[in-house]
Length: 368
Image (cartoon, rainbow, N blue to C red; front, side, top):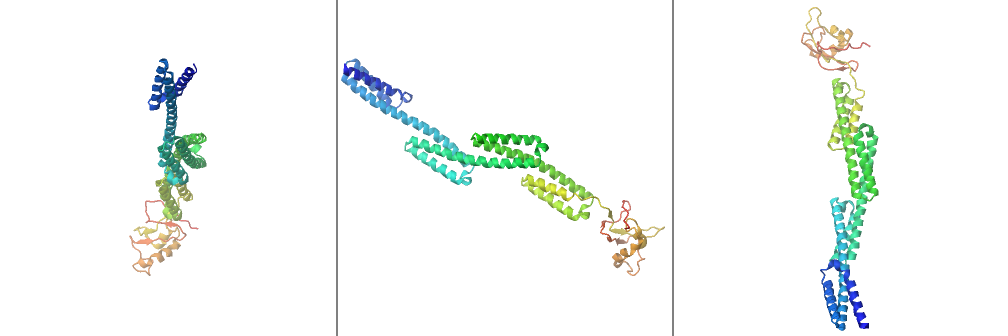
């Protein structure tokens, strides 16, 4: 009776040990355990208790080996999952050139990943799993650093947008940028670093769009200011201011072409500011062509007295001194001829340009 109970206990124990392996029925130890269990049961039913006990013990042994195999395969599956995750993270790190940007952290991650592959190869699956997790943690450290760096850039972009009052000037673009920035912050807090980077980059792109639009408007304004200045002869009347404005506009265009839109806008506004004092100045002729007027012949006295020349006949000597070398008789100021070109010098710093046009309207030259 005692042997009977012992054999029965062995069979029950063998059966219970093999149950844990049923998820891996293709492993040979499990199959052998089932085979021996069946033999033990048959021997028991036949009353061959010694054989039944022997078969039950062997079944128990193979069931134990099967459970060890199951444990090993489960550890392998866990390692497979951890390695796959680590592999994806390393691929991401490579995609952002982390080896160059974050050499220390990347080196640590790479070393752990190599170690985890070596442990896996030697079937030390628990160690491989731990090393794969350390790989992932090292890459997560890189991801955090990148996210923080991109968030800092996004923060600077938002500050710039606030500085130009983009909330009022570009409300739609500003709202979009602020929403992306808030989402980036939430993702960073949730340790979703890749999403944080993506949203920070979205913020940067949104603000850059605002900056481009602002630069477009500023450059258009600057070009308009240049055209207006040229319309009032600024290149002649305000040469320094005009030259400075042209240089600023050129710098603005260069910055714009290089996609440095904030600098482009600033330079364009400097162009406009350089021309702020430019206004129309009266311009008088620099050359007068002697006319044939029978009833009132041209002479230096009369020419100097014309309102568009000096508005003062006494200034005839200025014209004479400037032109006598071209006279047929340099010693005779009265000997001038129709068609003769006379240079009219500036006497008060006034602007003189071109040849007198009888059809044009000139402001009377000031006598004081």
